[in-house]
Structures are given as structure tokens and as C-alpha cells.
Length: 110
Length: 113
Image (cartoon, rainbow over all chains, first blue to last red; front, side):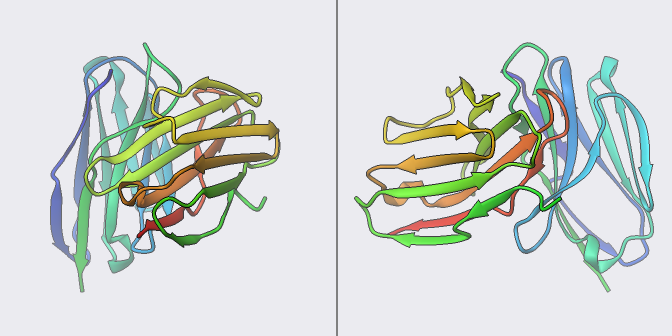
């Protein structure tokens, strides 16, 4: 199967700081999504981004499929950004379910 | 749209009991997925359906687990008999087509005593 690695595993920042989260994957993908799991456990879609760049407010993401990585940028962090950020992919050589990374646990301090 | 709906949101049961989790996908979506989240294994795919047909159940841990999708608007995940190691959060997700954006429900938090 495909391997998905996220870094860093943990990140503590002050409110207002910027951050970059990374996702590396070991094979070709047909789908790549970024999720935010909030403290209540909900998985919130951030981006569907198998390739290219997208932006949504303070968040943006870039996937370079040929080099097998994706980046999630968070600018001007707010305390509500705290939680776990997951990268998940659909392997190009397998079934259509998502394979998740272990996540980046982000804490934004006031 | 109401999004993906799951019930119950919380379930506490005793070992050996049957547990049934329910999911209503987003209307018009053709693919439905069941995932499980545990501290040890993270988020993992259990089974997925396309047009109500099970396509890949290789993630179902044991024969104690079964899933059905009798129609386009309803799916169940059943555990019989349940064991303490089944304690986890079970998520249902749906997508318009295979490989499209998957939208997750709020999850069912299961505790087996």
C-alpha cells in the first residue's frame, strides 16, 4: 500500500504566527485531502488538492504530485486553529478509500 | 444539505452485545465509506461501497464486523459480538464519485465495557 508521512508531529505556536505542515506520500495518488480535526473530534474538510495550489482565507495548500508531497500553510494563526491536521490520500494503484497520515497536532497559544 | 448523518453519536455497551451503527450519506453521493479511529492505529478504512455495492472490505478487522447498504440513503455497520478492543470512533463518509472529495459525518463514539 501507500505510505503517508506528516511532519512535524507536534507544533506549538503563538497566536498570529505562520506555519507550514508537510505531507509526503510514497506513490502516485488520485486524491489528496487536508482535514482539520477539532477538539470535538469532527473532521473538517480543508482542501481537495491532488495537484496544484488552492487558497481559502488564511489557509492555502500546494501539492507537487511529481515529487510526492503536499504543504498546508496557515497564516496569522488563531486559537481556533488548534487541533490535529490530517493529510489523506487515495492511492493511484489501489482502492478508493483514503489512507491517512498520523497527523500534526497544532496548539495555538493566546 | 444536512451533510453526512450518523447515529447514535455515542454508544456504551457491554462485551458480547450486538452494536449497530447507522449512516445516511449526502443525497446524490454514489460512494460511501466507513472508517475507524483509534489511538493505536489512527484513522483506517474499514469498507467502502460504490452505488450500494461493497467494493473493498479488506479493512474489516474480523468476521464479527459486517456492513450493508440496502439503498442509496442508508448504511449500517454491525459488530456482533462486540469486544473491548472495538472501542473507537467510527466515521462514515460519502463522495459524489470515487476519488472525489470525501465528506465525513460527526462519528459514533463506541465504548465496549
